[in-house]
Amino acid sequence: MNNGAWRLFWKRLILVVAAAALMTSCVFNFVTAPLIMCLMDGGCEEVSVTSLRGMYARTIAVACFASASALLCKYGTTMSIYKQTMEAHDVYSPTTEAERRDRALFCVLYVTLCMSVTLPINALRLSLLYRNRSDPIVLVFFVFMYLENVVMCLGETCFVTWCRTLSNKFLVINRDLQLLGEEMATVNDTAAGKSITTALIATTVTTAAAGRRVTYGGDFYGGPREQSIANAVEVIRIRHQLIRDALSVLVDLFGLPVGLSLLTLGVMTLFDIYYQVSDIMGADSRLMIFIYIWLLQYTIRFSTIVLTAHYTTKQALKSKIFITDINNRYLDSNTKEELQIFLNQLSNCSIEITAYDFITLNTHLITSAIVAGTTYLVILLQFDSNDD
Image (cartoon, rainbow, N blue to C red):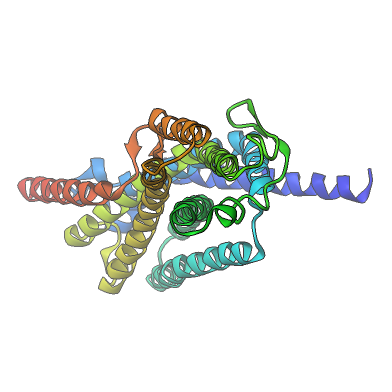
């Protein structure tokens, strides 16, 4: 084999070994969770909520295992479709260096923020457990649990970064639509049809996500100003369609992992507060600063996922406003037809980001999570007090 083949072989081997090690840690934590809780609390007979003892760690283990399995099964084929769709879009509107730098900077800043509120506090917790002479199996258990949490955070980072990329693409499309409307209202007949359509390239694009072909033959409607406006609308419509296809692929790939991440963040928030109040799960090694930092971490991750998805959907749907505004002007029949096709496509397709078609990611989810979490926390505390 040549050097390229060897590199690919070792890359896949390392990926398989890392995935196997991660899943093994998930199985280990799921099985040993009740034992670890008993060791940390001095014996199960002294605790009245045995059924809840391992739920925190087991939720993380199950979520990490299922998320990793889903990504391993889908990533190869799904990401190739995503890349093909984005390459097709770049034919019409190439990604600039500024956009690439912005994406890389956002990814670095977000990872840095998450790790700054995750790694130091977890390392401090492990050091306290070590100083308290905890059993080696307890230390291994917590190392695995924190590792699983970090892996899930990195998966969330991929989703948030790619979702934000698509949001920026929708933003550019909306700016082009707004500019088109402004030109039609303020610029003379000669200039109005040229500034947006000058860079259009005759090409044929395959939208792999939907399995259909979209053909644009340059000046499809002809040369006059009205036909040039129709051409511009057609190209913008195709770009919007390609980004919607890419968004569908992204939702298909990350639907289950993102849903499990949101569930896990909610469970960790709930049980961190509950365990602290009830003196469970090694409360002697859990300073109050831990609770504040952990809650900050969960809030950042949960809010970033939901708000990024919400903003992306909002940008995609915002195009309807600009299309309607342009359509209300005096236009030729070809442009009217293109605008109507564009509007019908947006009206007939479902533009939303969901967690495995179960939860829609929008701002209402944040308030619903707060209300539900508060309710369950009160129930848990009442259940604990009644047993006492």
